[in-house]
Length: 287
Ligand SMILES: [Zn+2]
Image 1 (spheres, rainbow, N blue to C red):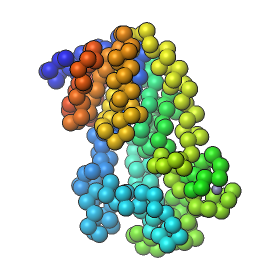
Image 2 (cartoon, rainbow, N blue to C red):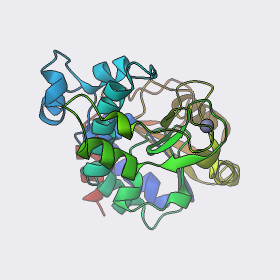
Image 3 (cartoon, rainbow, N blue to C red):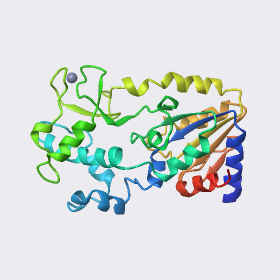
Image 4 (cartoon, rainbow, N blue to C red):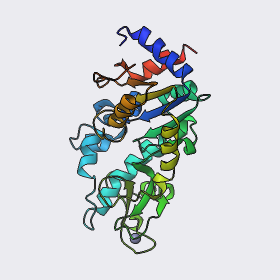
């Protein structure tokens, strides 16, 4: 293990440069490092002032209230929040700095990405969709609440209409409540929250990701983990540790503010516990 920050950045960069394959894991910490931090009160007050006025402190808190409790009585307020949130995070926010740095570090390398984020930041920064496996859904998609089919629906026109016609800061017009074109029940965000989640479109790259992992077994492989904490550790964090136990020539580079520790027994672990925006910028400066 390397203790000095600059030495670790250099070592990580060298490992990435020399790697045959790079398996990249991205979590919410990468977006938070770019400013879209669901736990940050300042970001919340600036972008969600109407909810701050009600006494909420951050995005996670309001999101918890409106998570999956869509029904006939609250539909206009439910979509009041979600249309605002999806519009802010998915449609209004441009590519964030840490993602742009990451793209510039990796663009000529042989990599595959798994991401639990649903905000489209990787694609905005330039990564091609066919090189990203995003198992948790997309803010830009709706699905049937039942669901009566595996179809998903691109939602930009729904979201824009909700915002344009809203009754007040918290309430959309009942004319804009989205319904399934097949069965007439509610449409809802296509996000993994229970067993009604429609995986369909989100799993189109699952086999490519698995193939890349298989191809990486005996190669000089870097597992580069960015901003992955303990919200859903069974998707990226724990599997990356397991692969690094088994793949003989692998290196785990774990970059995250506060949650970058690596358990003993993993060879070549590089833990960088620092602001990710700064770390990626420092790494990019080495090119
Ligand atoms: Zn339906």
